[in-house]
Image (cartoon, rainbow, N blue to C red; front, side, top):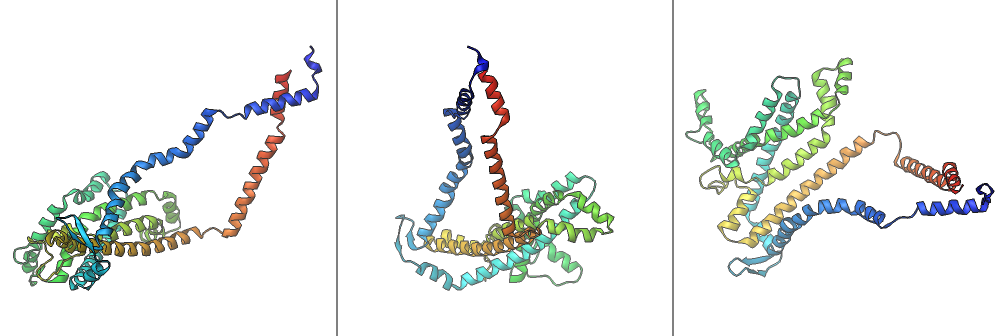
Length: 369
């Protein structure tokens, strides 16, 4: 048979058959598709399973206990409802602890953030022995919190502390670091700043190094000095990192426990509860009074306070992100229309390739011949 006399109909049918054969998807192709869809979820599932066991379950169990008058010996309790929360809130100790917690938090977080930004800006400069200085600012974070608290509690001693000795040498009256509430807050905040400033410094330094150096070169050509470059380039570029640092500092500052616990030898927050914090009182209720129902209620109150402050930070974050994203001249409707047009153009090109592909038609024809 002469292949050159093949009719166009037979050629068309052969081409359709070849196209159908190329579109066939086997069992292996189906597994590959499922692998692409399910693999990311399988890879992250161990974290969520572990968090469900050691995170969400204790939180839910604590919520149940907070509504009960819990008996630790019988491992059971009597349901009393929101009376547990009312008892905690009506206690004058709660408001004293809440005041002390926010006071120490503000005295530690604000100076800590300012010092971290300043030190990070200095380490970002072209100085000698960069690695040495960067590791040096992280050393206080490596120290044990108990060791830091013991050292600083002796430094801020009322009678034989180093700070009062230095103040007396220059003619200043000794400060009652333990009996005065505000002075004790400053001392505890100093411990927190000493330990956490270096940690936040390295986070901010990493963000500063990610800023393109072309910005600084262009600013230098325009005549901007170091201070102008810092406020016009560095700080605006650090917004997402600053938000992260502020949120983590807020959570850690409201849960402060080690420093107030080790500030004196008793660990009860002072004779008049001068530096009693929420977590310190929670520890005393749970393991000092063995009232786990009330301790669980106080833990949930603290959780709700942190959650409320976190929502405020989230609103601020959204506003900052919206400001950064508003630099585009197109509105949202115009951007959606542009995406629809681009998708329609891509779909039209794909349809044209499927229905009219000269290269594939020529290859099919040669194969039939």
